[in-house]
Length: 359
Image (tube, rainbow, N blue to C red; front, side, top):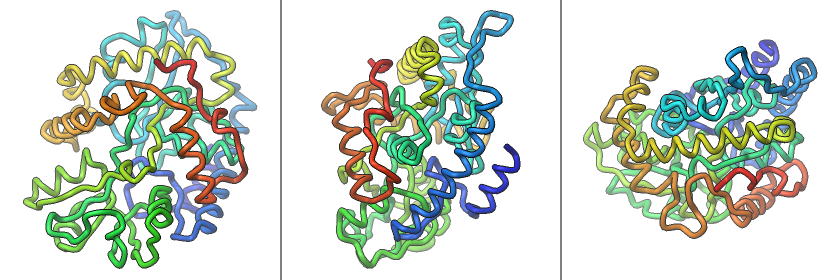
């Protein structure tokens, strides 16, 4: 596994520190994107098959009777995954017979690889990623939504002439290479002269250039920009009609072999999210210890933004509530990926998710 990972890093070395983005690099050419993705999928699949052939996907109780489970998150500990920490700290997983370890993510962690290899039974990601990987032969299945709406956005200065995504024409945008939504914007708005530069997820360049526009999470970078004195506006990607879910997923093999474990994990996780949104104080204190880079003020901002924007529970949107999926949303995302030509082969989108475990 170490050799496979080192090979992947050589192919995809980047100076950035990405947030929850598909870990592959491409230019604005869909052909370049597909080539890089094939390299990643080959390595992930090769490593995964090697490990699965040795270990399988068995979930066996430990000496205390609890089934050990690992959840691979998609970034460092922060409020965007607070419900899982709540479920663990409040004993909800233990009450369900599960001994859950929450493994932090980061720029060098490929969650899909962790799940496919059996190193983790569940991981966080997005529904478009699950569909793309599924089409390339890696059978991942989403079992619940962690967010009904994606907090991904573009941040501009208040005085910027960019008031909508069509206004990006002729402007420079800092974007993480590998962002499928950026390909969608180019096609959706007929953008031909957007200058793409790598996003760093620092606001330093943004603060120095009044014409700077950058990709960010509405729960994060705007806080730092405003704290430094900048007046900003944000444009949510989900407002464009590109609306993948943020999800938890498992391998199809684990799902087929242990549907009872999946059901218990999803139920306890959703209970954790309900509890966390009602009172995040205890978990946020723990998150501060696990991730000292996040101040209590920043965590409060993130939680308030998640709640006011209903990113997690989807309140006020049709057919949306905590953990929920709709076939219509999945089908719409699938068709968008088909139009963008980022899928290796046609698939039944229903094979990439399950409605058995969501409320």
